[in-house]
Length: 443
Ligand code: SF4
Image (cartoon, rainbow, N blue to C red; front, side, top):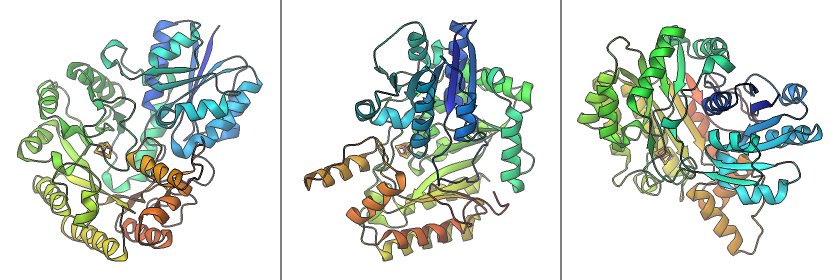
């Protein structure tokens, strides 16, 4: 019997928890697992989520000769390599996928061909089945999510939702006893933000067929009592026609609350009306900077500015939709003055709209992002080697700050903490998180 082990590796050593940790199922892996099971009913398929297991736990659970799929992100790549090495030692076939592997596939294969049999760029459902059926090429590209040709993700077959729901409740105590889970309405983004690596593999935006989306949500509501749906798609307001179709296809028998992501650029009277009809209660908005000149370096829409972000939040607040503002410090040309302007902007938003959750981090030029390419060009222009497969996020950030900012990383981290201190629930990406990061509930 074929055994398939799909693994979200734990964050690599030093990258701590935040208020989102272990609240959301690894939905991409659930989708792959569901597709594999539908095509190979006799296969034994399991998911190991590194939010609940450490590297050694996962290595202990590896089964000799199994197909091992690893979902990589920059903060877990080193853990993924440890698991891959252990898997090869017991004759597993190792498949790497995920955002990180998709961003630098050739580099990874050039360094890791001894422990990685296949690397999938993009979406893994169909390639994983093909590999199990005998496909042998090491680099497989699949840029289309084929949402509408694969079965709905069957979370129940592979995971217990309750621990995720309980973590969400524990880590968002003032939000009531919401039963939350995550979904996707689309993948891809029409924007090209300086620091974002998420859009590269798809090179386009793919939307889930609205009736299919509602079938999934209806099942979550009726089977698990889900009343809070966190749509982790890139930015829901980027296509008003899709948003309208989604709203108009909503079944009358369910009405869960929604938490979605949107650019400020996408907030206007038409999208607000649709968000209200969807029952959106919370929007994660990329505010990024309080400095007008730095805001323009991001490329998050033509007129992106602190005024635009403030106005968008004001429009949402006027209809009682809460926000999680997101800030990125360390934009090109960042200085003490611009950091202060960003703090003042965040403070003003806090004083007027009183948000509870905040994201703030120093800019990390993740592989696949425009910032990564700029950094690479800068370093290589000096004749220095930048080509490798392990890019520690913290080291990338340090290098970026030294190359592109007029402040040092200590000042950026101090302001990151100041901004995070405005929120009750704090989300960041940082090695060796301090006591100030997480939430007031000690998470
Ligand atoms: S709007 Fe969000 S998802 Fe889109 S490119 Fe910018 S950061 Fe990435």
